[in-house]
Length: 406
Image (cartoon, rainbow, N blue to C red; front, top):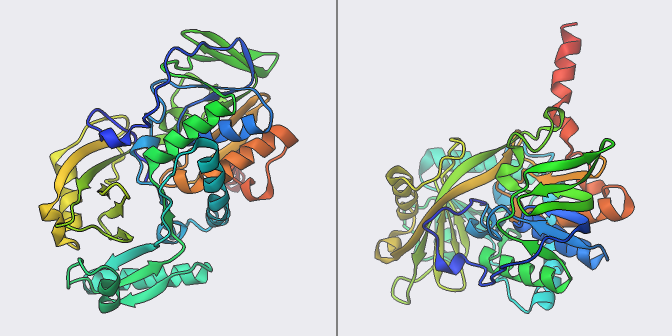
């Protein structure tokens, strides 16, 4: 789940790579606004396709959603009523992940802890079991792979869970990665491919000429480009950068998360585990990431007692061993959420492309988004799997309503 980092953050959640003092090129084929997961994935793909690419970042690499994410690749566990239009893109991107992983690890020399143990979605008590049955029926109707497990079968897979766990779903094809490793790998791979990354360089305005975007104005000067890609995550919908008729319906959804340090004595989970309250993701370095609250409160940073209590109580409800685990770090941040929780991948105007609004699914959708953006810039058209995620979809209901009352 994608949440952006605010001051108290794990040292493990750094990329380990420092980018300092890069000059702003006078001109590039492509300027990307945002050095998060989506921006760097697209930059890497475009540079490998032979384009010159500059990425400008208002803060530091990954300081938005990307470094604070859990790294879920979970189309089955995430599937819910109303998300059918997103599912084909999610499955397409999941199918691209093994190739994306292999190429990224080879290009960077950094392993990304791609884990294929699957995901367990748990229920305690009759009400939760009924809701889990509904979720399972929806998954099956949508053609997803998910197997119903009894409480005994769940605990056979995860013996440390409480006996009160009544039932579960095993989503074998829902995987995960470790975000700090992915971001470190992407940074190194992009730089090796010739991408220029300029940190602490916010986009102040778009440079328009004759109805076309020609670059981005920054405090360091104007970065001219044939195409500008807006991949600024939760900040993509902020007023001022885009004209009103191109405004993106993207807003921040705050999430609070924490990291527990496991030991041989406390043990750790083998699978990613979801409940109605929390999700828990074990990482190869011994951390157990617990996330994340969902708070529609705008850009209000901070970690609250209520948020942390909800996370710890939600985890303890199914995993008593967390009582012995050290709380190593807590953080809060902002998911980039569109009005329908699906990404916006579109040409907004000549010379201007958007790739943003991925909500909880940034890591899952990164390969498909990067490939779609690369195809758009190199062939002039989005591939079939990425069509239908344009800005126009948010305008259609208003037009239909006006016709109905005309």
